[in-house]
Length: 98
Image (cartoon, rainbow, N blue to C red; front, side, top):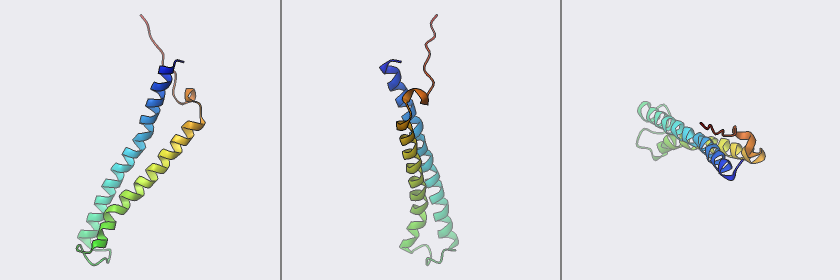
């Protein structure tokens, strides 16, 4: 396996691992907007209504929680990839010639 093949495999692995962060960000944004708007409009939180500055926590806490979980999964994937040899992670590229 050449050096170029190893670089391509490493790039593909890093891209696949970073997808976890993208999914975590999307889930956090959606969850934060839904929980924040629900808390603001319904007023079930007892935080004193929509004008209370503490209501910002209902928008930011779900995003922060999902990003923390996403970074934990990303870190675990990177650690697992460092512990395993690069040749085991992805199948070797094959060249087809005519």
